[in-house]
Image (tube, rainbow, N blue to C red):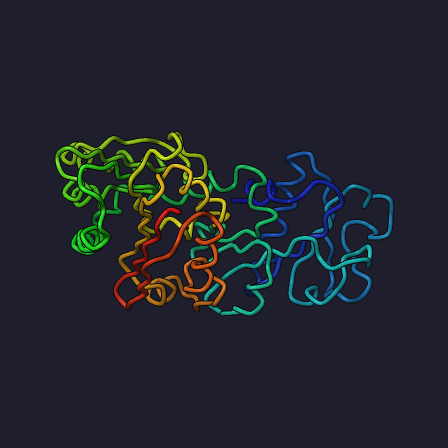
Length: 330
């Protein structure tokens, strides 16, 4: 995770603030500084409460700041200017905990989930930073690889919900359907039933361990398994009649870029089915956070992002026990 954060930071004398959570910002800032220095980037820690003349391991007005990352932590710095006094912080990293702070999180450039201190995860990155470095690949694989073996034991009861969603979606019989972000393959039996014996089922995921767990389902459903990044899929333009993306959108670093790639591989008139076996409110509560109106799957946001990327949203249902939406490729 620390290497991922380091890779997100732009080149040059960047001013970075780590905030949120009790003593965690200081801990993470110290470890991030060590990671940056180990990677050959000059980094100066700013101490103090912000708003005044900070101390630290170097004079903030000295030559040591030339080209260095200026790294501060704690809430006192939020309203302060960066050390060059010309602008606010270049990058604000917010640590999400069970203590709230939702309003401050919304203005952050990077959100790190600290609910599990043994496994902090980068949850959200601002669009301007999302394409920097390999953080998305490493974070996603790190999060899911260690959970793959127990995933079905925890969530195997969701199979009927997947089957119901696939049946409702109207996936064409005899067509090509792709499960993007297939996980352990819980949707594959339903997808095979939807396209029938003459259709094709393809399942793609970024995490090798998830594909290993999906293999028995794939064999039974006669589905091809593909190791692939949803942002850069190895499929030809217009090659799919329908896509299932179950729980995928919230893991994409750039929603519109991801939806654009999904549109690329879908034929005109094809379907995109977005699904999760829990509604947005229930899922947010499980993760210890409140819903916000700017989330990727919020109705207005999703309608705008699909329209901007070649889709037309035709169904939207954010119920207590599931999220279900359908978009048609223009």
